[in-house]
Length: 342
Image 1 (cartoon, one colour):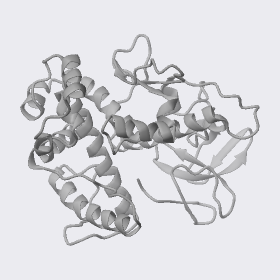
Image 2 (image 1 turned 60 degrees about the vertical axis):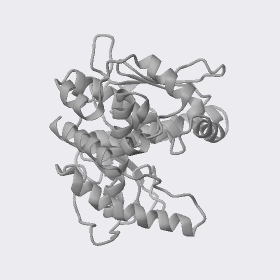
Image 3 (image 1 turned 45 degrees about the horizontal axis):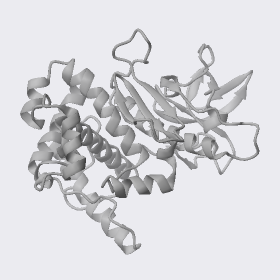
């Protein structure tokens, strides 16, 4: 993530900001320009101080504080990120304050917009899901009081329940599923990895290359997951996989590795944008466009050592509790080449 400043007063603002806390200007995100802009009222919409055009706030700005902007002539009223939503909650916006449903939906949308930062930075294809589209991307965000909804990816549709945004429920799932690094953003990045496997590997003619790195995905997926949950991960999983869950099946290995590469690349862009320097191996690179995955890894690792040490000094667990083996690095390099090739 890059750093942003308010064009009105020069103060630092953030990707999720709706207002500048210094001068009070309304803020919005221009997705094509990948920048935050201060706004001035103009006619029935807004003028962006960062560039030309007449803009509207996303139709979800009130419900979930979406700060992405929409061209004034857009017929949907929804920003490019919210346009991908297929099913969403309907919180009572007449109630005072923010309801639990609304808060959880807001947290989900905040994580989804962070996901879309990476999709836009990489210029990855992300057509809208429609009944006629076989490659579109869509989202279902569901209330699930009975716990019957299966979250995950299926033919371009990523399903999450509001419970994913409940702190207590998220902590419970981390423990019961053995996924101590589970977050909303990580879940999004994992599930979209499944989506991009479909369109970049399966439909992109890269199956044999994939199998040479991740293994054969043709053994029964359901049986593999059943064995994983009943028997636990393979004893040597850490030698070959980024997480224990990645060892369950090559599809999950790909999705976990995709999510981890996104963590690394976005994390490296963020620390570099703040001018942080960590060790002799830290070099200023654009991790989103660098074709040499190893140089990104070599630049990232010193930061993780420093960030873990800082967390320990605050009595917090390690921010980055991972060790990258050579097989994992080869998988990360495959992901990077696949993305840049797209």
